[in-house]
Length: 253
Ligand SMILES: Nc1ncnc2c1ncn2[C@@H]1O[C@H](COP(=O)(O)OP(=O)(O)OP(=O)(O)O)[C@@H](O)[C@H]1O
Image (cartoon, rainbow, N blue to C red; front, side, top):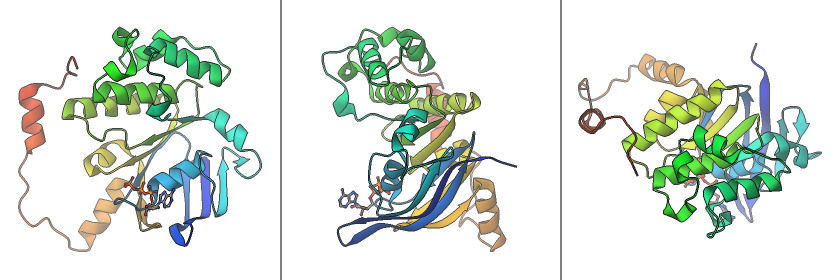
């Protein structure tokens, strides 16, 4: 029996007259990678930010690890890891100094180099954020979610804009984080990514969950309706070619 670590019930969010989230309910199990998928404007980030205590909800109930968001949002903050806005990365500080600063905000001391190691950025410890490549920036952003040793981390489109190697590298990182027991909630527009990473996905459209299951089950259900891909699929695709000829290793970015 899986333990529920996040329970969302009838969540509604209105911005003025516009209802962005229309009464959604779902549970996230401890230790899983749970994906929120959906087109632009579906309400994924809004839902995520409400659970992260960063945005007020209109109605509904949210319980994170037994803590009711209405009663003790600060207790929820202590056990979750949130990607900080890059605007909060003071331009004159290097990565080590930024981590130390954020750790101070959580009232914690962390070994910055060890943390940078987990995201493969030790050699950039003395660099400033603006000197990083896109992939390195994303990895640093994931490192910042781990500063308070959280039980749950939230990743909003972590691989958008990355090259295939950097995406795969980030997938490995996310799988490693989960292997250590951390629950991961992720939003993405990439279905290949969701298929590889997520234990279960909720497909959100116009503020409603229209499907929720394991990727495998969702695919099987579609196939059971008689769906077939319009043309025979080749055994490889262009991305396989790209990775095959450029190598899987992460580049010196
Ligand atoms: N602060 C706000 N004020 C008014 N409307 C907002 C606000 N934030 C989001 N919205 C609207 O709510 C809807 C859901 O936005 P949200 O950012 O949650 O979608 P999303 O699924 O994360 O989309 P994307 O994939 O583009 O990031 C959109 O129509 C958006 O315009």
